[in-house]
Amino acid sequence: MPLSIETKCLHLEKTEKLDEAAACLHYGAISFPIYQTATYAHPGVGKSTGFDYSRLQNPTREQLEKIICALEHGTDAVALSSGMAAIALLMEIFKPGDHLIVDSDLYGGTIRLFDNVSIKNGINFTRANCANDEVEALIKPETKAIYIETPTNPMMNVTDIQAMAEIAHRHNLLLIVDNTFMSPYFQTPLDLGADVVVHSGTKFLAGHNDTLAGFIIVKDEALKEKLRFLIKTTGSGLPPFDSWLVLRGIKTLAVRMEKAQENAAKIVEWLKTQKCVTKVIYPGLSEHPGHKVMKKQSRGFGAMVTFRLNTVEKALNVLEKVRLIKYAESLGGVETLITYPTTQTHADVPEELRLKNGITPETLRLSVGIENADDLIADLAQALKD
Image (cartoon, rainbow, N blue to C red; front, side):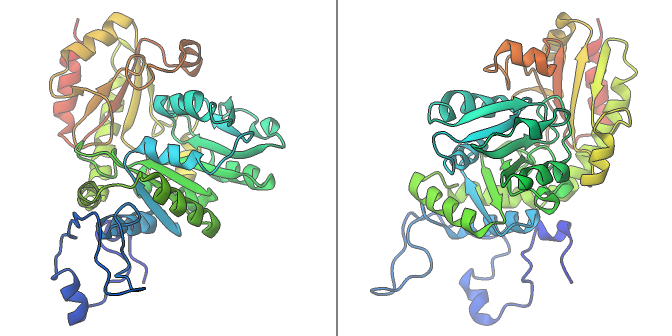
């Protein structure tokens, strides 16, 4: 019987009792060991233990990749030194002259990479609101892929993955989905037709704000071979200790995601009652334009909340006054964080694009953690006081 996702967070599919020789391989360790080694001795000429040099592969990283691959239902996963390292490596599968259609409301670091590095390397982009625009009309002969986040960062736009996959495959394009906000616990894009999934593993997968990591998961064998060649060549693989930290974090992914989502739902309902809050954006709300799509393609609504205040001064005041909630970059950890996209995550995005996407100076983004929801609401209440 296939394992549940909760169990897959802790175990690979192969769970039969180990024989004595297999048990001795890792001395029966329950916590997978950290293989902190750069190189490996060969048993003899033409012989290998399966590992030669940690830039190519490392047992701890390999274990993590197998877990991620199982969670996302792929054929292979590669673990990299950060989410941006993952996206940068993925861009290496394209060549000068290639064209990609990308969502206009992406993480600011992704936009910075595309606008300053990928374009320099001869790759061209067309931005679109992939949740609403007629994406198929933007396809050119040189188009190779569609790149989306769903929900988007930070405006929580929801794209129908299955519908987008159908468009992509009609034109022999790849569909790439950044699944960071949802994690494989709530959403598995490959099951919906996506070809590639990327993650900032720093976020919900690792879950403790203590390491950086990135992942690319694919289901196509030829693409798998390209990525394995690239990770070997560029040397951007995740180190063993960081791999172990992410392995440890994933063990509690299910309980963390459930608790954080529960907290987010309570905070959203409270925010809606506050006079100084002019807009609350959360896909779990029935009035959210992507609510029905989320219910169709996801197993939850996640723990990311974006809200807008009535004045810039009020938004800045909240950032100054929160105490339990930390004013910080990043998301997806056990601690609740509040972010100001205008000067943090999207500071390098041109102002015109920021405003077009709805990222106004009154906009705040909340990554809800696993604290007591009443404590979080109390902190927001005192921060919102005049």
